[in-house]
Length: 205
Ligand SMILES: N[C@@H](CCC(=O)N[C@@H](CS)C(=O)NCC(=O)O)C(=O)O
Image 1: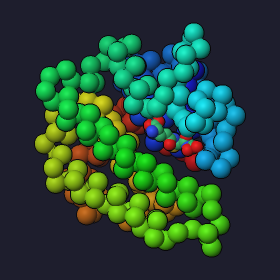
Image 2 (image 1 turned 90 degrees about the vertical axis):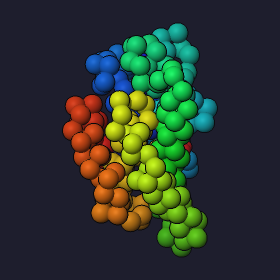
Image 3 (image 1 turned 90 degrees about the horizontal axis):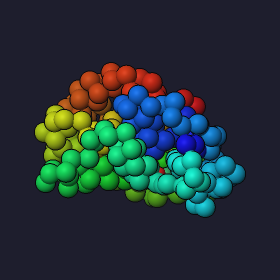
Image 4 (image 1 turned 30 degrees about the vertical axis):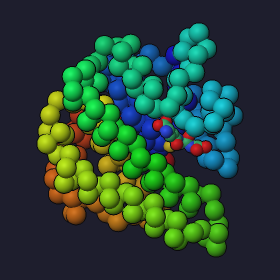
């Protein structure tokens, strides 16, 4: 299997964490996929016409995307049980989507800085994305901590990758620091970040 990859991508990181949790990081060959919406990467476009990473290319040439499809495939393939089958699955899928949407808002802020000249940036649009990030963080702090104290699911991995991405790209993205204002999430995130799967996948520029 091949995986389109960039070391800074939080969506790629979710996939890498799942592979690490399965002790299967050697099962995929990493293919450079670094690009942006205005400078698409050829490998990324060849694997996924939308040019987004990650994309998992199976040995028969089938492309699986996006990250939520890939993590679900890997969970089944390596029998990880990161997706509950009881009623709690709806909470799991909702928090997984919540963390991804937070990340999408953050990645859009980063692209606004990376892809546009300063004069072309929209402060109203950046503020709107930052508002999404703030509200998503507040909801995790106020509603989701009991869930996060439970057994690890794909939602825990999504939230943990999102939290560390906010820290990693805070300067470029321009959002406020989140730890002091979200102390329960801060404490949880520090514990989760100590997992070997998280340590093995720390983002780099
Ligand atoms: N919903 C997608 C989002 C993936 C995504 O936005 N990846 C970024 C890198 S972090 C990307 O490929 N950007 C290039 C582009 O948008 O053209 C997923 O979960 O995989």
